[in-house]
Length: 321
Image 1 (spheres, rainbow, N blue to C red):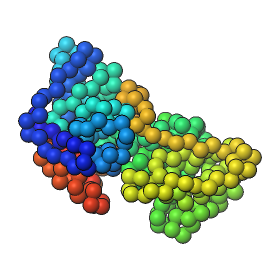
Image 2: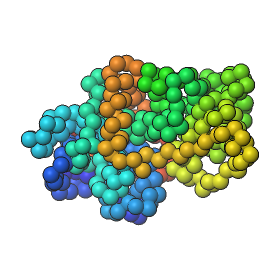
Image 3: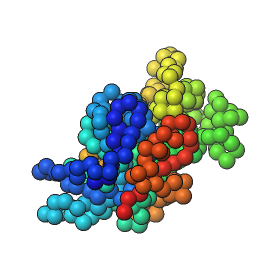
Image 4: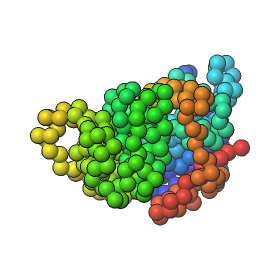
């Protein structure tokens, strides 16, 4: 089969004759139809995850069709998924014609989406789910999302205000189209004004901007929770330290939670995706916008990684026949 191979030296190469993988009991073989290249995929091939076993086929997210074994109840079904701590880390990932997935880690793809759209749900939407779940967001909470225009940020916005969570959402980003313009108000003080001085119950920071995260902590309501997904390491930042006022932390009973989707199994991710499927099919959640992505074949993946590694802002989607 055709595949992309990450060798551990910050490079990937195209392999036109990789052996087709064989399945073990409890596994299925998925014919990959589409797989995006995420920022975390780039971080992975650059050695950003200490448990990655090179050489490995990279790629976390996918959508495709179960082709083996024919005896499986999943045979012929369209599925979508994302990694836990193993797919593209300790076992081959999705930037190939086929990928092996544990049968209990499968989720049926939304029927109202093209597989190219379904493939883009995995990392951003399951991460969004984690940010709200770990922050204990509940119906009626006000959730402030920094980086609301980004992939994960926009997913958090849609998920939080849907019937799945029923939260009030405030968006934060650069410009007047957001509820909180972080250029004009980097201290996020507008969030206090928009909540009659109370502050949001939950702040989800998706930017990795440590100054924004610190500001988010300061504007939280009593019993508020700050949920973070990154320190910006995937964009080259090396700073990881924020000063926290412990007096405020204990007096206001604030909480800070980290959210790392690599620490959650494919099976858990599949459970999130199954719930998300209902939201997509009901129209509560919007399908991913494929127009933002440049479609490439397996042969072009190595070039796409090099382009992203040079700082390009392009988004790539690997599409297979």
